[in-house]
Image 1 (cartoon, helix red, strand yellow):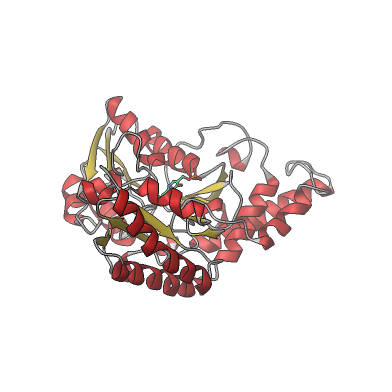
Image 2 (tube, rainbow, N blue to C red):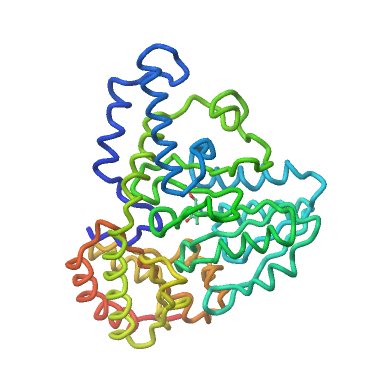
Length: 382
Ligand code: PLP
Protein backbone atom coordinates (compact mmCIF):
# COMPACT_ATOMS: atom_id res chain seq x y z
CA UNK A 1 0.00 0.00 0.00
CA UNK A 2 1.13 3.54 -0.76
CA UNK A 3 -0.43 6.01 1.65
CA UNK A 4 -0.85 9.58 0.36
CA UNK A 5 -3.71 10.63 2.65
CA UNK A 6 -1.91 11.97 5.70
CA UNK A 7 -4.33 14.89 6.16
CA UNK A 8 -7.11 12.35 6.81
CA UNK A 9 -5.10 10.43 9.37
CA UNK A 10 -1.54 9.17 9.81
CA UNK A 11 0.05 5.85 10.67
CA UNK A 12 0.85 5.63 14.38
CA UNK A 13 4.62 5.87 14.76
CA UNK A 14 6.20 2.68 16.16
CA UNK A 15 7.80 4.62 19.04
CA UNK A 16 4.36 5.99 19.96
CA UNK A 17 2.95 2.46 20.17
CA UNK A 18 5.92 1.42 22.32
CA UNK A 19 5.32 4.34 24.67
CA UNK A 20 1.62 3.52 25.02
CA UNK A 21 1.87 -0.23 25.59
CA UNK A 22 3.00 -0.23 29.26
CA UNK A 23 -0.12 1.77 30.12
CA UNK A 24 -2.35 -0.85 28.50
CA UNK A 25 -0.54 -3.73 30.18
CA UNK A 26 0.93 -3.48 33.69
CA UNK A 27 0.59 0.18 34.53
CA UNK A 28 -3.17 0.54 34.59
CA UNK A 29 -3.47 2.86 37.62
CA UNK A 30 -5.99 5.67 37.88
CA UNK A 31 -3.97 8.91 37.79
CA UNK A 32 -6.05 10.25 40.68
CA UNK A 33 -4.97 7.36 42.95
CA UNK A 34 -2.31 8.08 45.53
CA UNK A 35 -0.43 4.76 45.40
CA UNK A 36 2.50 4.09 43.11
CA UNK A 37 0.81 2.94 39.86
CA UNK A 38 -1.55 5.92 40.17
CA UNK A 39 1.35 8.30 40.66
CA UNK A 40 3.13 6.70 37.69
CA UNK A 41 0.10 7.38 35.49
CA UNK A 42 -0.08 11.00 36.75
CA UNK A 43 3.58 11.50 35.98
CA UNK A 44 3.14 10.14 32.45
CA UNK A 45 0.19 12.48 31.84
CA UNK A 46 2.13 15.53 32.99
CA UNK A 47 5.09 14.53 30.81
CA UNK A 48 2.75 14.37 27.82
CA UNK A 49 1.29 17.75 28.67
CA UNK A 50 4.80 19.20 28.58
CA UNK A 51 5.55 17.56 25.23
CA UNK A 52 2.37 18.98 23.71
CA UNK A 53 3.04 22.43 25.22
CA UNK A 54 6.52 22.33 23.75
CA UNK A 55 5.29 21.28 20.29
CA UNK A 56 2.92 24.26 20.28
CA UNK A 57 5.32 26.75 21.87
CA UNK A 58 2.93 27.37 24.77
CA UNK A 59 4.09 29.43 27.74
CA UNK A 60 3.17 26.78 30.27
CA UNK A 61 2.07 23.15 30.27
CA UNK A 62 -1.01 24.09 32.32
CA UNK A 63 -2.38 25.73 29.16
CA UNK A 64 -2.90 22.27 27.59
CA UNK A 65 -6.10 20.32 28.33
CA UNK A 66 -6.63 16.85 26.86
CA UNK A 67 -9.84 16.10 24.95
CA UNK A 68 -11.12 13.15 22.93
CA UNK A 69 -10.39 14.57 19.44
CA UNK A 70 -9.99 17.68 17.34
CA UNK A 71 -13.74 17.99 16.94
CA UNK A 72 -14.26 18.09 20.70
CA UNK A 73 -11.52 20.72 21.05
CA UNK A 74 -13.17 22.86 18.34
CA UNK A 75 -16.65 22.46 19.82
CA UNK A 76 -15.48 23.23 23.34
CA UNK A 77 -13.50 26.29 22.20
CA UNK A 78 -16.48 27.74 20.35
CA UNK A 79 -19.20 26.95 22.90
CA UNK A 80 -16.95 27.79 25.85
CA UNK A 81 -16.06 31.20 24.41
CA UNK A 82 -19.70 32.02 23.66
CA UNK A 83 -20.83 30.94 27.12
CA UNK A 84 -18.27 33.25 28.68
CA UNK A 85 -19.79 36.22 26.79
CA UNK A 86 -23.55 35.58 26.83
CA UNK A 87 -24.37 39.19 25.90
CA UNK A 88 -22.23 39.09 22.74
CA UNK A 89 -24.00 37.48 19.79
CA UNK A 90 -21.63 37.86 16.84
CA UNK A 91 -19.18 35.28 15.46
CA UNK A 92 -16.63 35.57 12.64
CA UNK A 93 -15.37 32.55 10.72
CA UNK A 94 -14.46 31.64 7.12
CA UNK A 95 -16.20 29.80 4.29
CA UNK A 96 -13.53 27.06 4.21
CA UNK A 97 -13.49 25.73 7.78
CA UNK A 98 -13.65 22.02 8.57
CA UNK A 99 -17.10 20.63 9.42
CA UNK A 100 -16.00 20.37 13.08
CA UNK A 101 -16.19 24.17 13.16
CA UNK A 102 -18.54 25.15 10.34
CA UNK A 103 -21.41 22.80 11.19
CA UNK A 104 -21.51 24.03 14.78
CA UNK A 105 -21.34 27.68 13.75
CA UNK A 106 -24.09 27.14 11.17
CA UNK A 107 -26.25 25.67 13.93
CA UNK A 108 -25.49 28.65 16.18
CA UNK A 109 -26.47 30.91 13.27
CA UNK A 110 -29.81 29.08 12.95
CA UNK A 111 -30.25 29.52 16.72
CA UNK A 112 -29.95 33.31 16.44
CA UNK A 113 -26.24 34.22 16.44
CA UNK A 114 -25.15 36.66 13.77
CA UNK A 115 -22.24 35.22 11.77
CA UNK A 116 -19.84 36.89 9.34
CA UNK A 117 -18.37 34.30 6.96
CA UNK A 118 -15.13 35.69 5.53
CA UNK A 119 -14.77 34.79 1.86
CA UNK A 120 -11.63 33.45 0.24
CA UNK A 121 -10.20 34.34 -3.16
CA UNK A 122 -9.23 31.95 -5.98
CA UNK A 123 -5.86 31.31 -4.35
CA UNK A 124 -7.60 30.27 -1.12
CA UNK A 125 -6.50 33.29 0.92
CA UNK A 126 -8.55 36.15 2.32
CA UNK A 127 -8.08 39.87 2.60
CA UNK A 128 -7.57 40.80 6.26
CA UNK A 129 -9.41 44.10 5.58
CA UNK A 130 -12.56 41.95 5.47
CA UNK A 131 -11.83 40.84 9.02
CA UNK A 132 -11.10 44.37 10.25
CA UNK A 133 -14.42 45.57 8.84
CA UNK A 134 -16.33 42.66 10.35
CA UNK A 135 -15.15 43.08 13.97
CA UNK A 136 -17.76 44.75 16.21
CA UNK A 137 -18.09 45.41 19.94
CA UNK A 138 -20.53 42.49 20.14
CA UNK A 139 -18.14 40.03 18.45
CA UNK A 140 -17.64 37.24 20.98
CA UNK A 141 -15.49 34.90 18.91
CA UNK A 142 -13.30 34.69 15.82
CA UNK A 143 -12.69 31.09 14.73
CA UNK A 144 -10.28 30.66 11.81
CA UNK A 145 -8.20 27.62 10.88
CA UNK A 146 -4.44 27.68 10.50
CA UNK A 147 -4.05 25.07 7.72
CA UNK A 148 -6.81 24.00 5.38
CA UNK A 149 -7.22 20.23 5.40
CA UNK A 150 -8.18 20.04 1.71
CA UNK A 151 -5.81 22.48 0.05
CA UNK A 152 -3.09 22.96 2.66
CA UNK A 153 -3.52 26.75 2.41
CA UNK A 154 -2.22 28.55 5.51
CA UNK A 155 -4.01 31.52 7.00
CA UNK A 156 -1.80 34.18 8.64
CA UNK A 157 -2.80 33.38 12.24
CA UNK A 158 -0.23 35.79 13.73
CA UNK A 159 -1.53 38.75 11.74
CA UNK A 160 -5.16 37.73 12.30
CA UNK A 161 -4.56 37.58 16.08
CA UNK A 162 -3.05 41.08 16.04
CA UNK A 163 -6.04 42.48 14.14
CA UNK A 164 -8.58 40.74 16.40
CA UNK A 165 -6.92 42.04 19.57
CA UNK A 166 -6.34 45.58 18.22
CA UNK A 167 -9.94 46.03 17.13
CA UNK A 168 -12.03 44.01 19.60
CA UNK A 169 -12.24 42.09 22.83
CA UNK A 170 -13.19 38.91 20.96
CA UNK A 171 -11.71 35.52 21.77
CA UNK A 172 -9.58 34.13 18.93
CA UNK A 173 -9.81 30.37 18.33
CA UNK A 174 -7.61 28.60 15.79
CA UNK A 175 -8.32 25.13 14.45
CA UNK A 176 -4.75 23.90 14.20
CA UNK A 177 -5.65 20.24 13.66
CA UNK A 178 -4.02 19.92 10.24
CA UNK A 179 -1.08 22.18 11.04
CA UNK A 180 0.47 20.72 14.19
CA UNK A 181 3.54 18.62 13.50
CA UNK A 182 3.84 19.92 9.91
CA UNK A 183 4.95 23.54 10.40
CA UNK A 184 6.54 25.48 13.27
CA UNK A 185 4.02 26.81 15.80
CA UNK A 186 4.92 29.23 18.58
CA UNK A 187 1.77 30.16 20.47
CA UNK A 188 3.52 32.25 23.10
CA UNK A 189 4.51 34.75 20.44
CA UNK A 190 1.02 34.89 18.88
CA UNK A 191 -2.23 36.44 20.02
CA UNK A 192 -4.18 33.20 19.91
CA UNK A 193 -6.44 32.34 22.86
CA UNK A 194 -7.53 28.82 21.95
CA UNK A 195 -5.85 26.28 19.64
CA UNK A 196 -7.18 22.80 18.77
CA UNK A 197 -5.10 19.76 17.85
CA UNK A 198 -5.66 16.03 17.32
CA UNK A 199 -3.05 13.29 17.77
CA UNK A 200 -4.07 11.10 14.82
CA UNK A 201 -3.00 13.83 12.40
CA UNK A 202 0.60 13.64 13.63
CA UNK A 203 1.35 9.95 14.07
CA UNK A 204 -0.49 9.52 17.36
CA UNK A 205 -3.57 7.40 18.08
CA UNK A 206 -7.16 8.31 17.23
CA UNK A 207 -9.48 9.40 20.03
CA UNK A 208 -7.19 11.91 21.72
CA UNK A 209 -6.81 15.63 21.15
CA UNK A 210 -5.98 18.73 23.10
CA UNK A 211 -7.14 22.29 23.48
CA UNK A 212 -4.61 25.00 24.27
CA UNK A 213 -6.22 27.61 26.52
CA UNK A 214 -4.01 30.64 26.91
CA UNK A 215 -3.57 31.66 30.55
CA UNK A 216 -6.22 34.18 31.51
CA UNK A 217 -8.59 33.27 28.66
CA UNK A 218 -12.17 33.64 29.72
CA UNK A 219 -13.92 30.54 28.41
CA UNK A 220 -16.48 28.42 30.14
CA UNK A 221 -14.37 25.75 31.86
CA UNK A 222 -15.98 22.61 30.56
CA UNK A 223 -18.44 20.83 28.33
CA UNK A 224 -18.01 17.68 30.40
CA UNK A 225 -18.28 18.66 34.05
CA UNK A 226 -16.47 16.95 36.90
CA UNK A 227 -13.11 16.98 38.59
CA UNK A 228 -10.27 15.95 36.28
CA UNK A 229 -8.02 18.24 34.24
CA UNK A 230 -8.45 20.89 36.98
CA UNK A 231 -12.20 20.82 36.51
CA UNK A 232 -11.92 21.87 32.87
CA UNK A 233 -12.57 18.53 31.16
CA UNK A 234 -13.63 15.66 33.34
CA UNK A 235 -13.67 11.88 32.98
CA UNK A 236 -10.91 9.56 34.19
CA UNK A 237 -7.97 10.38 31.95
CA UNK A 238 -7.34 7.95 29.06
CA UNK A 239 -3.76 7.50 30.20
CA UNK A 240 -2.52 5.37 27.28
CA UNK A 241 -4.03 7.81 24.79
CA UNK A 242 -2.55 10.81 26.57
CA UNK A 243 0.83 9.07 26.61
CA UNK A 244 0.27 8.51 22.87
CA UNK A 245 -0.33 12.19 22.07
CA UNK A 246 2.69 13.14 24.18
CA UNK A 247 4.97 10.65 22.43
CA UNK A 248 3.63 11.77 19.04
CA UNK A 249 4.20 15.43 19.93
CA UNK A 250 7.78 14.60 20.83
CA UNK A 251 8.22 12.63 17.59
CA UNK A 252 6.99 15.43 15.32
CA UNK A 253 8.63 18.27 17.23
CA UNK A 254 11.66 17.60 15.01
CA UNK A 255 10.39 19.27 11.85
CA UNK A 256 13.51 18.54 9.77
CA UNK A 257 11.90 15.46 8.06
CA UNK A 258 9.25 17.81 6.66
CA UNK A 259 11.92 19.19 4.30
CA UNK A 260 12.11 15.78 2.63
CA UNK A 261 8.31 15.55 2.61
CA UNK A 262 8.17 18.91 0.84
CA UNK A 263 10.67 17.78 -1.81
CA UNK A 264 8.59 14.64 -2.45
CA UNK A 265 5.37 16.67 -2.58
CA UNK A 266 6.90 19.24 -4.95
CA UNK A 267 8.13 16.51 -7.29
CA UNK A 268 4.78 14.73 -7.27
CA UNK A 269 2.89 17.98 -7.85
CA UNK A 270 5.15 19.40 -10.56
CA UNK A 271 5.29 16.16 -12.53
CA UNK A 272 1.54 15.61 -12.38
CA UNK A 273 0.84 19.19 -13.52
CA UNK A 274 3.47 18.78 -16.21
CA UNK A 275 2.48 15.36 -17.54
CA UNK A 276 -1.30 15.51 -17.32
CA UNK A 277 -3.18 17.83 -19.66
CA UNK A 278 -6.00 19.92 -18.20
CA UNK A 279 -4.80 19.65 -14.65
CA UNK A 280 -4.47 22.55 -12.21
CA UNK A 281 -3.37 23.19 -8.66
CA UNK A 282 -6.07 24.39 -6.28
CA UNK A 283 -4.85 27.36 -4.27
CA UNK A 284 -1.67 29.33 -4.22
CA UNK A 285 1.63 27.74 -5.24
CA UNK A 286 3.46 30.13 -2.85
CA UNK A 287 5.34 27.74 -0.56
CA UNK A 288 5.11 30.20 2.34
CA UNK A 289 1.33 30.04 2.24
CA UNK A 290 0.86 26.29 1.99
CA UNK A 291 1.54 23.19 4.08
CA UNK A 292 4.67 21.39 2.85
CA UNK A 293 2.84 18.06 2.39
CA UNK A 294 -0.41 18.83 0.55
CA UNK A 295 -1.40 19.17 -3.12
CA UNK A 296 -5.00 19.55 -4.17
CA UNK A 297 -5.14 19.06 -7.93
CA UNK A 298 -8.15 19.22 -10.25
CA UNK A 299 -8.46 17.26 -13.49
CA UNK A 300 -11.01 18.71 -15.85
CA UNK A 301 -13.83 16.50 -17.06
CA UNK A 302 -13.36 13.50 -14.88
CA UNK A 303 -14.55 12.36 -11.48
CA UNK A 304 -12.58 12.37 -8.25
CA UNK A 305 -14.40 9.37 -6.79
CA UNK A 306 -13.56 7.29 -9.87
CA UNK A 307 -9.91 8.33 -9.68
CA UNK A 308 -9.85 7.44 -5.99
CA UNK A 309 -11.21 3.95 -6.65
CA UNK A 310 -8.83 3.30 -9.56
CA UNK A 311 -5.88 4.34 -7.42
CA UNK A 312 -7.19 2.19 -4.57
CA UNK A 313 -7.19 -0.82 -6.91
CA UNK A 314 -3.52 -0.06 -7.56
CA UNK A 315 -2.88 0.07 -3.80
CA UNK A 316 -2.60 3.86 -3.57
CA UNK A 317 -4.65 5.81 -1.01
CA UNK A 318 -5.65 9.41 -1.77
CA UNK A 319 -8.68 11.55 -1.01
CA UNK A 320 -11.13 13.56 -3.07
CA UNK A 321 -11.08 16.28 -0.41
CA UNK A 322 -13.08 15.84 2.73
CA UNK A 323 -16.44 16.93 1.41
CA UNK A 324 -16.62 16.00 -2.27
CA UNK A 325 -19.79 14.09 -2.79
CA UNK A 326 -20.07 12.04 -5.95
CA UNK A 327 -23.49 10.64 -5.11
CA UNK A 328 -25.33 13.96 -5.21
CA UNK A 329 -22.92 15.56 -7.70
CA UNK A 330 -21.94 18.47 -5.49
CA UNK A 331 -18.37 19.65 -5.41
CA UNK A 332 -16.37 20.27 -2.25
CA UNK A 333 -17.58 23.46 -0.50
CA UNK A 334 -13.93 24.48 0.00
CA UNK A 335 -13.25 24.36 -3.75
CA UNK A 336 -16.61 26.01 -4.49
CA UNK A 337 -15.68 28.81 -2.05
CA UNK A 338 -12.47 29.28 -4.08
CA UNK A 339 -14.51 29.55 -7.30
CA UNK A 340 -13.01 26.42 -8.83
CA UNK A 341 -15.28 25.74 -11.84
CA UNK A 342 -17.61 22.77 -11.41
CA UNK A 343 -16.13 20.66 -14.24
CA UNK A 344 -12.75 20.93 -12.52
CA UNK A 345 -13.88 20.73 -8.89
CA UNK A 346 -15.63 17.39 -9.47
CA UNK A 347 -12.36 15.89 -10.66
CA UNK A 348 -10.26 16.89 -7.66
CA UNK A 349 -7.79 14.78 -5.75
CA UNK A 350 -5.92 15.63 -2.56
CA UNK A 351 -2.46 14.12 -2.21
CA UNK A 352 -1.19 14.55 1.35
CA UNK A 353 2.24 13.11 2.06
CA UNK A 354 3.87 12.21 5.34
CA UNK A 355 7.12 11.40 7.06
CA UNK A 356 6.96 7.71 6.11
CA UNK A 357 6.63 8.26 2.33
CA UNK A 358 9.57 7.49 0.05
CA UNK A 359 10.92 8.54 -3.36
CA UNK A 360 10.06 5.11 -4.68
CA UNK A 361 6.39 5.55 -3.73
CA UNK A 362 6.23 8.87 -5.58
CA UNK A 363 7.85 7.19 -8.63
CA UNK A 364 5.25 4.44 -8.57
CA UNK A 365 2.40 6.93 -8.46
CA UNK A 366 3.92 8.97 -11.28
CA UNK A 367 4.37 5.82 -13.39
CA UNK A 368 0.80 4.65 -12.94
CA UNK A 369 -1.26 7.81 -12.74
CA UNK A 370 -1.10 9.54 -16.16
CA UNK A 371 -2.15 6.39 -18.06
CA UNK A 372 -4.88 5.63 -15.54
CA UNK A 373 -6.30 9.12 -15.86
CA UNK A 374 -6.20 9.10 -19.68
CA UNK A 375 -8.07 5.82 -19.55
CA UNK A 376 -10.75 7.20 -17.24
CA UNK A 377 -11.17 10.33 -19.30
CA UNK A 378 -11.64 8.28 -22.48
CA UNK A 379 -14.71 6.61 -20.97
CA UNK A 380 -16.00 9.43 -18.74
CA UNK A 381 -19.59 10.57 -19.26
CA UNK A 382 -21.05 13.44 -17.22
N1 PLP B 1 -10.24 20.28 11.95
C1 PLP B 1 -9.53 19.97 10.86
C2 PLP B 1 -8.89 21.05 10.05
C3 PLP B 1 -9.42 18.62 10.46
O1 PLP B 1 -8.71 18.30 9.37
C4 PLP B 1 -10.05 17.62 11.24
C5 PLP B 1 -10.01 16.19 10.83
O2 PLP B 1 -10.20 15.85 9.69
C6 PLP B 1 -10.75 18.01 12.40
C7 PLP B 1 -10.83 19.34 12.71
C8 PLP B 1 -11.40 16.98 13.28
O3 PLP B 1 -10.46 16.29 14.04
P1 PLP B 1 -10.83 14.84 14.69
O4 PLP B 1 -10.86 13.88 13.56
O5 PLP B 1 -9.72 14.56 15.65
O6 PLP B 1 -12.14 15.03 15.37
